[in-house]
Image (cartoon, rainbow, N blue to C red; front, side, top):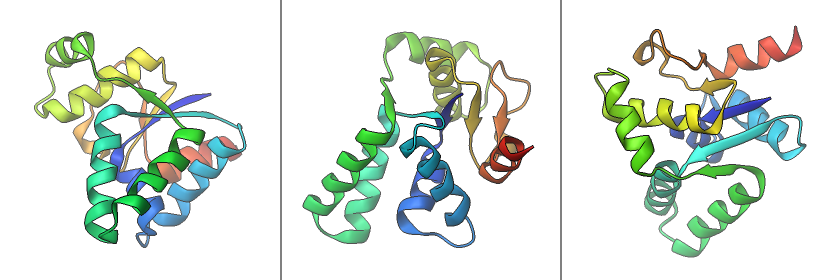
Length: 138
């Protein structure tokens, strides 16, 4: 199974943000153990670096976080095709549209995010981290 993971979910795991950390960390553990194929966008990489740097105040540690993620997750490059596809999706938020277009390019079975209300009637099923984990158990 292939999933594209939203920035917020990765940050929940890294920053141990309560109450979301447990499910986000479990998803990363599933990717680590090759029980699923996970990916993030190249935009997410930059966001994680800058937000980690703000929290840690140390670029070496922020880069180490990225190195660890790169071992576990694939990176979907946000390119011209994704940018054009995002425009055609008709979403009000262009960042969300880029995420969906990236999920389509990656051929993700699911887009895992906590901001589900932003995504309605899309070509990729959108699911919360908690619902994704429950679905896997059933």
